[in-house]
Image 1 (cartoon, one colour):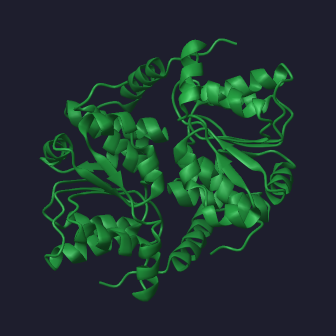
Image 2: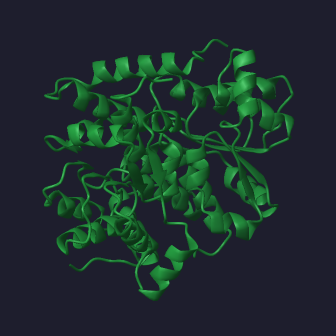
Length: 208
Length: 208
């Protein structure tokens, strides 16, 4: 049986199809590349209207990525989905604390979630680039810590998915005057969050 | 601000909402738990009509999981999304070969994709439980190897997502008389594939 085997060829062809099918939009070239990559990873054209990119957010993300920033992710799945070659080319690093024993213990002690304890640890370490694909509670705690002037995030990807708190967590974080990309409504997920990080990195580095 | 912090409470409430909103269906209890978990991980009700569960597939998957099967996944992201506690409780193991140097070398030598080389390695090792969330080519090669009587998969999750080959790869694999769960059409993904594995495991083990 004949089928296309070259991964880059498949990707280019996919983006061409997405471009044709997504119809009219007001996105600039960089914004478009992010939205297209989210649709590429979900095959869900609804994301055309769900991706919210704050003015100046892409510039800020690029600046941070070029400086070799430490990228905090809320799950191992987001971390696994981020392109390792692009990360290495940029000198960036992905961290996720949700599986650490010390985080599990802290969550138990403080009667909170592991996601929240993990964010607190990242904040204590001065992390500035946050990526959330799963836990609404992680976004809520980041907002609280920011308002208490304990956290100083410079860029946030807010893409928790779900039916309880996900939509609200993104509405809350959008109230902050911080460069961010969010997914509105219930949709999102670790795949979507990772796709946004990759799309941003691909604005700066050559694809394999 | 008040928000629900207990992860199990959030999950139960989410499943309740999904049940209410998904409307009528002909699914039995076990099938329903799989479909609901896919909707839970995507917030996309279209999956109600996209999840294909072959008759007897759940029974076969449960039998394999109870026997402590080795679960092959096509990406690190699928592997990362599979619940480690449930895996451990069942004595199962997740493997993914796509990042191995030997696989990259073999792919280069044989002018194929790493996904395909990784499946070949798994087949050589006698793997019987396959989970695909990303690469259509991996499903195509598994079908070829099966037809050449080199592979003997006992259960397959076919959930590649995308615009080039994904739909077709799932149509091809469905031609085989093997217990399987697939996602029809373009949709799917690593999150969906992992959700199906987790849903199957949760039929057998207590949730945290």
